[in-house]
Image (tube, rainbow, N blue to C red):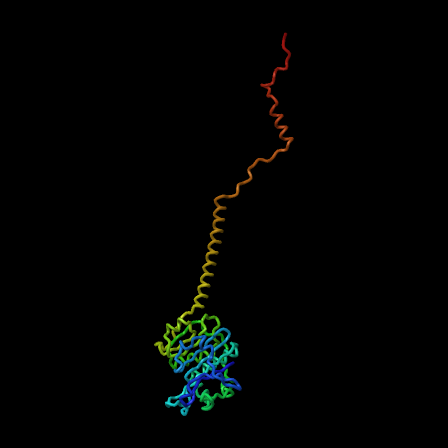
Length: 295
């Protein structure tokens, strides 16, 4: 797992930048998945936002604009904000970990701990304590039940729905049968229609009016339902054909019964000869006179 932290220092030359944080090194690096997933089109990074997404075999969790402690301000006295991105190959234990971090972010429990791992010092105006950052996620646990629903759900970015989403993520795994790469978005930027076009699984936005979840069917479930309907239709057609065929056979046998065996018995050769000879014997009326003529 790779962790990226975005923050800044107090002075003007120490502007916001991303650092790739390793155990023994920190270097400027923007998480590549942010560009691949076009995250800048989903959120305003200066506002508190959450994105949980897949890209190929990798899983990304991005949490932006977390509040820092009071003394961390820039050269204009504006409060500095911290953002963190976790990137790793998707495995069951990683998926559970990312859900657990997202739950803490949704409940407002992440900002203070992240800020404690960042100090005002170094070449870039801030440094990250990698061990402390890792320690934050070492003992997080969540449930492993299958995804609660393949339905897409959207609502207002409001404390009640954030709490409801946190509860769902704490109990249920992420779905794996969706076409979308974007699983969870908490933003101030997108409309419900925009989230629907992206087929986001769970989306909260300040631009959505509904303070209750709005359920929307997704293309994967539609395809599954359509496939099921086609199978049912084909099965019905086959049954109808079978019934018609059986009915035709029964109807045909009723109208055309099998004929009885009425042909005469065959005769033996001797019987045929005897009958023929008898037929040639003249009757008494036909027989010629056998008396001698009178002279």
